[in-house]
Amino acid sequence: MVLTLYHSPISPNSRRVWITLLEKGLEFELVEIKLDGEQFKPEFLAISPFHHIPVLVDDGFSVVESLAILDYLEAKYPTPAMLPKDAKDLAIARMVQLVTVNELLPAATTIFLPQFLGLPGGDPEKIEKEKDKIATVLKFFENLLDDRLYFASHNLTLAEVVAGTVVTLLPSIGISLSEYPKLNAWHDRLAARATWQATEATPEAMEAFKSMIVARNTQQIHT
Image (cartoon, rainbow, N blue to C red):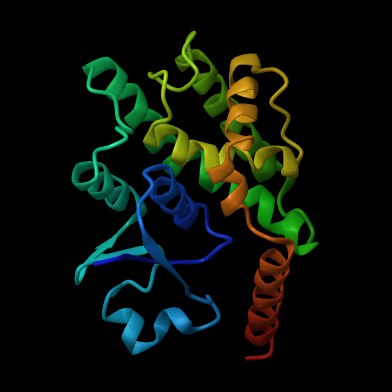
């Protein structure tokens, strides 16, 4: 059976699974879920009761939550290995994943959305707090990198797949990586990979997402 990934091309959560499937060389079908209401249709809720993307379906088995999907793929399709075996290295990879999901992505989204939609930037004090949080994360990442090409490994890991889909967006919201030389070089290595380039959201996808958000906000205002 072919794996099926239900995703949205503008979602970092979806993209991390998409990249992993490509890096592992797996055959899969890509099904786009338009977040304008398709996620609430009964047929999608049957596989994703919380109406979230991504969802991976493997021979009738549905896996929700992107980190759980990554663990599933690593356990079932272990070649190439994308998690270190050493306890310390595994801890580093896991820390990078969880700090990205819990700290970096929410802060970056708070800054990104107003800029992307052309809206006022919101509370300046809140924005500065989010920028400080991002700086703390970037320093943390910089200190975790050593002389190896990737976090805790000479080979690409799931830490890269998670953090790399967010860190590569930071320059677009005005956050420079120039103060973090190891992280900056790491970023450039990822951006040059075919899997990152193949999964980058197209301008058309970004504009469609923008139009959807604007339409939704307009509808809420008039409701």
